[in-house]
Image (tube, rainbow, N blue to C red; front, side, top):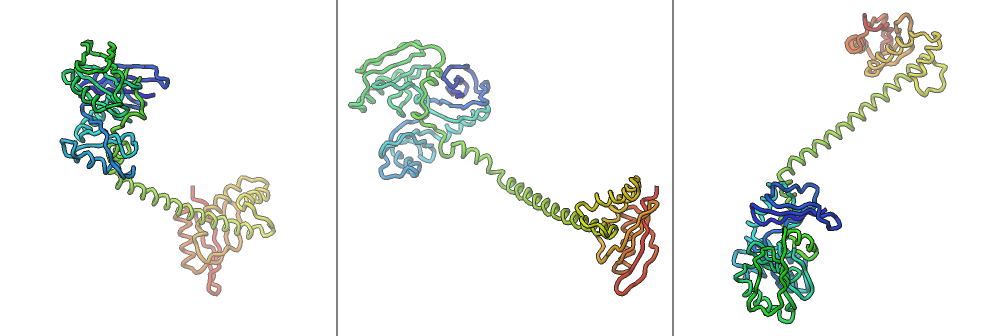
Length: 398
């Protein structure tokens, strides 16, 4: 749903919320801080006396270069330095382009007021470009000693009552054959309006309420000029707010990538360790049950076989626990080969080959320190370049 805010001055604003079908849902008048624009598409109307609406010829320029060429084409028509002005482009017809000119200072003031009130404008438009358009007629709106005039789709100005006749006669003379048949005026001032010397029919219609209601009902987006262009466009403003955080965001992105890569490496390492442990368990299972032909899940098959051998005895749990704990340390020992295993009375007897006596002592120490087991080396005999040993392993002492 669109919301129109008429920024009449720094202290005063009026507003209206419209439904999708144009029906007024709510309206009001007061300070900007009192306006709730959350969830709305906001069109802000600003005083036309601060915006110069003109047309300039820029022959031979491509459309993408117009924004650079227009300021210099208008330089001689402006009192202030072009560097101090913001130029918003409107409709283009041949070599002619409609332009809205406003000072950077005024743009910054308006945007600061809106920001302080927590209002994000989607469009910023001169109020005269929100007056009704009708064929063969110009439109006036009299409001608070101001006369707003729209005399074309993207042409208009703001006058005071004293100079209105003079300005209108000059504009009518400039219009030539395109002069209107009549001038319609909506009078919100109740002061009446006369235009001496203006030889065009004047139709004055008394009006009441908030002018923003009339402007919102008549507004045609495609026939207005949005001042939020160039450096004041939403994209540029968001980029300006985002720019100081780019370095921090880049560092955060690098950190996330490094953490993600580290997680993948850790996952791969753990998967490799799991695979090696499963292979070790399968090796132990085949050595313990040499008649086994097919091994799908060595741990589960060993538990079932032992349970069958013991008639379903619960001592299977003790064997599985001891074997799993010891297997982790066996897996970390190089040149270790298990010959046979036996389990009785809560004790695991292991016959194995290992590289040397030092490795045997280190294996015993790890089983004691890291697995918390009771380990007894029952025999150790050197055979060639390795040692044949028998270990008796018990669980931790209670």
